Amino acid sequence: MVRTNDMQSPRSAIAFDLNSYLGDRKRQVEAALDQALPLLYPETLYESMRYSLLAGGKRLRPVLCLASCELSGGTIDMAMPTACALEMLHTMSLIHDDLPAMDNDDYRRGKPTNHKVYGEDIAILAGDGLLTYAFEHIARQTQGVGSDRLLQVIIQVSTAVGAAGLVGGQVVDLESEGKSDVDISTLNYIHTHKTGALLEASVVSGAMLAGASSDLLERLSQYAKNIGLAFQIVDDILDITATSEELGKTSGKDAQAQKATYPSLWGIEKSKQESKSLIEQAKAQLEGYGEAAKPLLAIADFITARSY
Ligand code: GRG
Image (tube, rainbow, N blue to C red; front, top):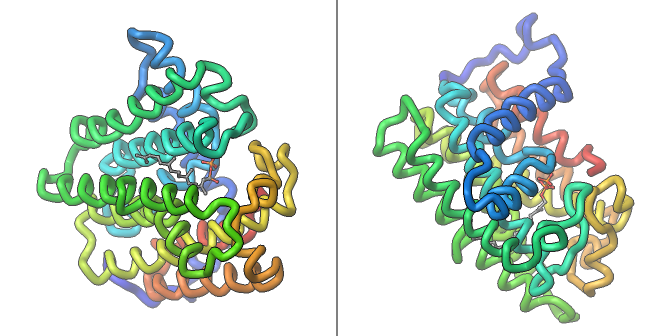
């Protein structure tokens, strides 16, 4: 994608309608997820995997992947298998996170958690099934992308969810629970790994599929790191300010579990300011990309404006 200076062009003067963009993309992703994972034998396992995968949610990770691929000159079709895989990985992390051995939650995406419906044994295995199927799905279903690029995508995504990413972040989070001396660098470690890594992989993998230049990959990686941290700060604020109904999961869990959070270290006002400043830094990375950057710019704004 060639950078342009058409920010003032008549087309760019038309406001970008984020709600209809997100609604359209969400529908496309949900149709692809439904197709990607049919109900097979053993039915209990597949039902359990489909129960959580098709339970709704913002679908932020697949939407970021598709938007980043398009910004980089690629197509939705070439990125859809990776976009679905990212949602499978995110969903499996939520299933495992909700287990009694971890966050012990009863309610997720407005529904009873997976283990509440299928039992802990099947919930663990549904997570395992989604984790492995995600990579199979990328490898088998991606079309129009060379195997070298696909290998880079698999390295990026697998690193993001493993011990150097989500799993590592989750471990430090569990170890920090109930401690009164968790400092900002530990909190940043937890969230750059537990939340940020998969958001970054979503943005970067979309661009990799399209063969983005190293300059654009670096800009998108910085964009994603900034929105990832802002996303978590807003998540911490919403845990205090929003209701369980609004969130579709139990609110107030952080205080209950005596977790260190950004608002507990900084207060709500400073947390809001920090998240806004991170979003401005994210958007600055995409200056000069014109029309093509509008979805990613609008998604960045959505992160601080969201109420769920
Ligand atoms: C990934 C191999 C592997 C194991 C899982 C349990 C675990 C290791 C990691 C926990 C990761 C986790 C649950 C992080 C929280 C991320 C987060 C902010 C979730 C909420 O995301 P939203 O708001 O949710 O995008 P929706 O429901 O809208 O998709």
